[in-house]
Image (cartoon, rainbow, N blue to C red; front, side, top):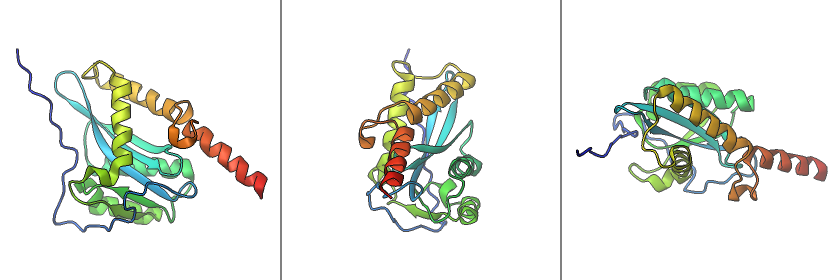
Length: 200
């Protein structure tokens, strides 16, 4: 039999919504935590043709996954939940920049209101240019490659949620990252915080 390759579009641009300027310019770096975040949505294929969706919020300083949400839909509440989770981790996001693509969930009035409420300034790359959000895209690719390995799909939604959650936890706490001097993101942040306190 022949099975068509699954094609899932996670970025649906809404030309009628406001476009935010690119405040990042492909420079995914920050001097300290809680200054610059990137985020994206990726699909998680399930047996039988269904999908789950993962929304992420990643700190450019440490590559730490600060907030994420998994659901069986791509409604605006998915990205709102991910950003709210990030606020829960940091305590406050006031003054931070959140960079994304031009997906309709990110340009929606509801998400703009969430950003305003949390004190977050939105930034967006060019339409149709994945390099403008390369850090988030790279995270998604690594996650799928390492979780799915030789499989093409997750067995069911419960397995998908469990395995992705486990990987995200391991990513922050144990997975060594070249950007972090081969430390895990959580360890990198703690190490640098201790270094700064000692220096002062």
